[in-house]
Length: 542
Image (spheres, rainbow, N blue to C red):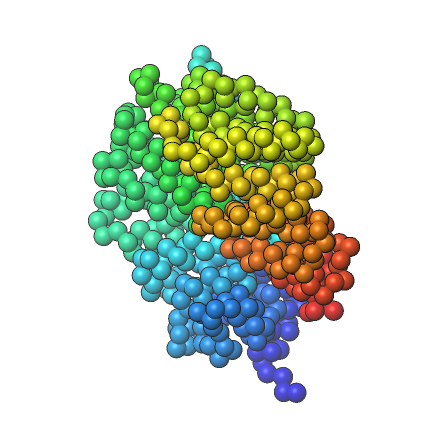
């Protein structure tokens, strides 16, 4: 066999990469180390970091794209790796798939010069593609860096009783130099007006970096100016400022499904820091103060949910408890009931079922004073899950039925916007969870099939439904179908940065340990291996 220079380099890189990996290096760090010796494209360096041949990458690429919309051949991959000397520039779709394989961001796979050749829409797609959560070694590196700002410590303001941050002033949100450079490039490419570019830069730096640009587009010019003045401390907080903050928080929820929690965390934490400082700093009218308190509750809700979704339990609980303080100051029973429900769910996920019951019953107490029908439904869902874990099946299912009756009715004017998710389809998903917990697989399978037909285009939620579907099938020992369902979840997990989804997928695979030698489970493990979830050797390792 003729050994080419390229193959010799790959062998050396594979050996070096394995040694660095054993020391806990991420694949991104390994690619950076290799760039010190090799003057190659980022695409090729990331392939070398994984020690993969072009043929291996092509095989995995085409498995990830069974429809063939971005089909790959070895010669084409070489072309992409050689751009701009090669003939083809990688499209955002191709970069998405390659970023999944290399467990990195699409932006890292192109040089600054190549990035500048894409149009605004393509650059946005590239900036939004982040698959670092697939690299198990990233988990020890990613959390401090994703937020870009330190977790704010909350203390009582003198005389106010209101928790505020000790964070640095706005305009220094802690973005790394590379993030600021990426933000500057994006604005230079998309915004011709120099003054507006500077204003958006200041706002985006204070509100989480490049991902915040998508949100800022929803503001009017007046709202941008008022918000910038509040951020800089050069203007008072007025109705325009609070409206801008409320808009941004509302649109964050819409980005959760597409961007995932990892990319939204810097935005949520930066908003929380900003609103906390405005509450502490400003002399406000009672009406504006109440609106800012509600905004603080909302951003604590959002931030708590995102930290919960990346398995940062302490960070989630801290934010939920701050939301409780805001709700108490507002004396709002709906917000108090909802926050206790979130704390119950977080405790239940950790297996702290006694604490979960305490919060669920506290939510029940507060919801009696709530005028929102949907909050009554949401609180019933929390209670249903807690009762299922205590083994009280009849009471759990009665709570589900109560929630389903309410969720199917038209929205009331007293229903808050954050309960947009409380629909009959989501109630079905909760009933599925309860049936699985109560070990009633036949009813669980019926609920799962109904949930899957009520498709609301929520990718992550579909993943959770499929995991619970698979858990019910495991209870019935229908192993081939279990493997098929979990294989689909594995594909979803590569597209979304929810660590909670990965955790539930891992738990479902662990339940299959008695069937580890089964052919279907071995095939499943081949799909789980890139996620670091396989418990048996893959064919590449045997």
